[in-house]
Every structure is written in C-alpha cells, then in structure tokens.
Image (cartoon, rainbow, N blue to C red; front, side):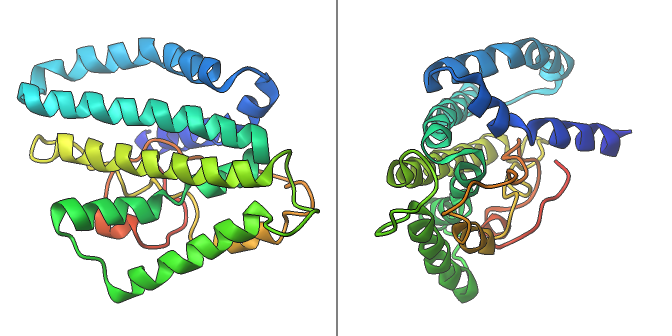
Amino acid sequence: MTHLAGLAGVSAISFAAIFVRYAGTAPGTTTFFRALYALPFLVIAWLLVKGRDTRPRQVRLMAVAAGTFLAIDLTIWHVSIDAIGAGLATVLANTQIVFVGLFAWLISGEKPSRRNLLVAPVIFTGVVLISGLGDAASYGDDPLLGAITGVIAGFFYGAFIFTLRRSSQGHDARRPDRCSTPRSEPSLLRWSSLRSSPPTSTSPSRGPPTAGSSHSAFSPREPVGC
C-alpha cells in the first residue's frame, strides 16, 4: 500500500511543471496557492506525528528555514518554466545534485569522490547548451533567463534538501535527499539537443525527497519512488 501511495504521489506531481505552465499566473501567485493547497494535508500529517517529535526549538527553526528555501526555489523555478518551458526548467532545477554535494562538503565535511567532482563540469556544460548561447534557434521565450533561473532554483532546492536533512538527523526522521534527483546528469546534455524544438514531455518530478545521503545525492541516478 505504501508503494502504491508513493507511486500515485510521484505520478501526480510529475505534472506539476505542465500545470504551472498552463496556469498562466505569476510565479509568486503559483507558489502561494501550491503551498495553500498543501496546507490541510500538512496539518493532518503534523497532528499524526507531533507526539513523537522531540526536536528542540533550534532544530525546528532549521526546518522552518528549509521551508523558506523551498518557497524561494519554487518561485524561481516557476520563472524558469515561463522562460524556457516545463521540461527544460525541470531538468535545469535538478542541478541541485551538485549543490547538495557542495553543501555537504563545505558544511558537513562529506568530501565527494573524484568521480563526483568530474560530474559537475558535465552538468554545467549541459546547462550552457540548454541556455542556447550563440544559438538563435534555442527553445523558449528567453532561454538564457530560463537557464540562469533554473540553476538558481537548483541552488535553493539543494539548500532545502540539505537543511531539511540536518533538521531531521537523529530524530527518527527519514533523510530527504535520496530521491531528490529525478534524472541523472546526462539528461542535461540529452535535453540540450532538443533546444531548437519544443520538448514533448517533462522529466519526472522534483518531488519531495525521502531517504539517502548527500553523498549519494551528488551521484547520478534514475528516479526512485518517493
């Protein structure tokens, strides 16, 4: 039952970028109502687990910071969707795999392997190709703006994942960064080859992550059930 529920959730949120594109509302407005629609479900979840939540105030504030990072990420991601389309914006936002690894390295001392360090230039090469620098046929209303905001969204999404993980460590909470990377790094290069024509589909969702480590989040992987 848990797996089916997870599959249903992933399937539903996979259409988020498409719905944002067709909503035609301002990025901030979209973020506000996405959070508002989720609020009743979050309240129910909180009521179910609040008795087992023994985190101190400082750690709870860290979770609030994580939520703030997520709100910023969503708003900037919605700008990227408007500028470059749902599919490419989703791929670009998943540069978060680099930022999660970077935060883990600089803050937690979790040094990535040499292979992981070599992956980062490959990812950002894909970002440059997607941005359409020097290519008048690039897809999107503003490919350069879409690429820049997509990477910034990835930065804040990485900050959200890392901070949420830190706020739940040692408190019987599931660590949040294993399934935060819907596609492996080569997706950036693969999608970049489509920049001269509209994407036919979006990549899987940037849905809520659940388990893993910041080391693994810095490595390529295919989607897993979240």
